[in-house]
Image (cartoon, rainbow, N blue to C red; front, side):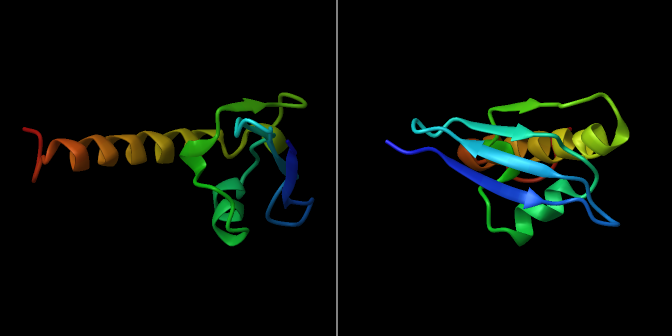
Length: 94
């Protein structure tokens, strides 16, 4: 059994450091979720954003939390789309 560490971003002009820890059982922990974190997931070919099981923050500040609102919304949209695909819903829900 092996665990892995993926460095998604380092400190740059447009992103803050973010690390994805993957345990031997597949549990995924994101360390910090600064602005640009979702883009980093796409660019690094890491697993989908919604596959993250927990987020740990090293501090309460924009560099650690700036990407959380977008990540939460993206995860919620992906979950809704998944439910619609499984249930065969077509069109609006009104």
